[in-house]
Image (tube, rainbow, N blue to C red; front, top):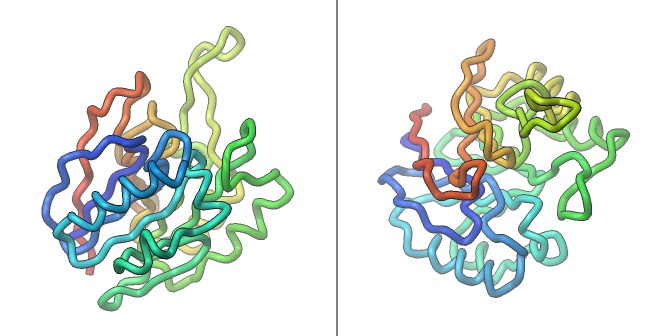
Length: 210
């Protein structure tokens, strides 16, 4: 199975290689309006991939209020909001949740984290989370007090990933930390399309499974 993954496209539409499964790991929009989601859904419908998975992100505000089945599920797109789908024997689990930061969508307080990530099935082969686990492709820009940046991923998500041990974890959210990292049995990929200057510079990532 050939999978193609991207994230944080923010109303951009990157060139997308052929594959069996297309994965978008969140922040398809800037403001999450229904109009932005409509345009994104039309783009998804035109992609040639047999299967399509969309996990919303914190910018995709309207998806928290209404999953917009008529835009996505009605056209065969699997919208994963804390749920799994099995495609040709491969189980994908998706969650849009990220640690609380300002007043964006799908955010949680630290005390809520464990209950959220305990939902990940042990049968998961590909874990798709909008945000990263702590210490893995999660380095945000530096500040006066933290000039080398800071890790903003979720510690409870890290524990869950270590416990479940998916083959792949796909994420985005932190534009500055795009890339790939090999873990203990899990390959981590931050597939954010926009870079730290919000330029659409990073191509979709292709990987094989099954």
